[in-house]
Length: 168
Image (cartoon, rainbow, N blue to C red; front, side, top):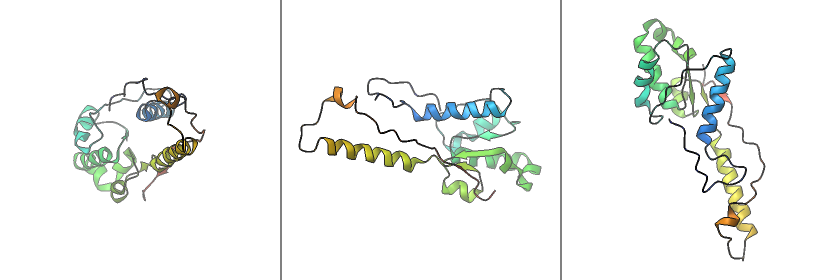
């Protein structure tokens, strides 16, 4: 997906405006380091739905590997690789060329390696911040937008998760 615009009107000090942009940039940097400094070929799609797998595959059929920012897209590519490359498809070698990003049950059932995004950590942090906010202003008038934008965010590291191999 395309980069999200950096909207600043609701920006909170110390909080990055787009997790998607941050995630994409981190993955691009890691792939560049892994590939001895060569930039990876980035193919942007409208969303991370499996239906865009054909567009990705047609743009780069001979890719050494596909790093998909969703399990749906990875599974769509897995099907295309299995059908278009009989030697790879029958041996299961297509698994060595795909990584998804969700650690979904779908990826697990398909035997695709996938990263867990740690969304439960983001949810927990959001709930903690809301509880801190409500506790701080219990029995008081809530502050206006100027004050809430300066709300200090708790400094807790957010680790996106580990690579889940899903049996491969």
